[in-house]
Amino acid sequence: MARSKQVTKKVEKKAEVPLITKTQNETPYQLDPAQVERAANALVAHMKKHKEEKEAVGTKDLMADEDEAEENDQPIFLSVSTKKHVSNTNSLKPTKIVLPHPIIANDAKICIFTKDPQRVYKDLVASDAFPAALRERVGRVLGVEKLKKKFKSFEQKRALLADYDIFMVDERVIKIVADFLGKVFYGSKSKRPIPIRLTAGAYVDKSAKKDKEPQNVVGTAQGVAKEIETALNSTYLSMSASANTSIKIGNLSQTAAQIKENTEAIIAAIIPKHIEQGWRNVRSLHIKGPATKALPIWLADELWVDDSQVLDEPFQKKSIGEGKTAQTKRKWDEWEEELLDEDELAEKKAKREAKKAKKAGPAKKSSLSKEKRKALKQDALSSVQTSLIA
Image (cartoon, rainbow, N blue to C red; front, side, top):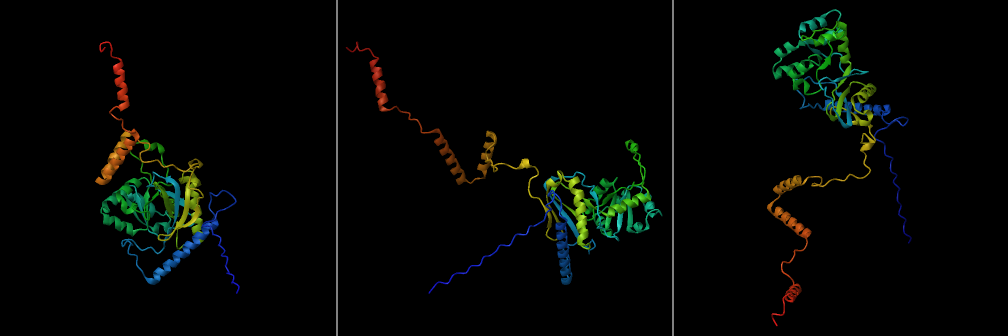
């Protein structure tokens, strides 16, 4: 009976889909709009589905702050990873980036911290030249002196933080306000006061800065209103001494197309101006929600900035004692011996003595051989005069 032939199926491997797509026409150091749109659509769909499931079950966030109002709209962030650390010493004054689609709600309540006297700025906001729609959104104007008098305790500062959605501060007193409010306002980026120019529209005499008494310049109603509107239509970047930075680019209530346009505008403003060596120093760009995984929109092909950092040969790791002086090596051995047990220390000393003995070679014999002793005796006898014996 003939054997049946074994039938084997050829399993065809599916072609691996690339994680991201890049434009092939020009330099790879640019965004692919199609990739950004794909990531935005997937992220928005996932966040909306997760929100609907959470509302259906009725779960409550146990980590939420009771003093702060619950946010109905979830933020979306851009995460920038660099190959080398990027630092910005002016961390209290974040960089303003104007967005094509604003992310601050139209009904957000505003509180403004001003330079003393605060009455001047209250009258400015209440004047007829100030836009009425913007005046309704400004809930409070606080000078530095009144701020320090009314909000001394930690609980009072927390209550002030919960009462308003947006905080703005005159850039002339930003250091004083930051030192007073402390980690309550500056511990996170969610409600960190936005610096604005309350001298906008006014003439500032630069020569007057040399005088001992600084000028108390107050801007015009139109200039200050324009400054506030620009702040409301922008997002803010605070660079820190690290290789990762996140910046808010949108909200869940916005469409994927709006998030895509905001992302492209922010990246065009950040990389050339705020990252040393530009695209060469960027490792990856991702977009994410508060509790979602990060979706990549751009990944670097290499992990080095300059070609000079690439080694021709494998890296040779130095031994522990290599490159150290005799004194440093002796101290290192003493410190290592202190950590060993008695048995391990005795074994190490025995190995050290055996190594020294092997290096020194066989020990020399103290006594003379028999042949050499006989030769020396004959030489001594031959040197004695034999005439006396005869």
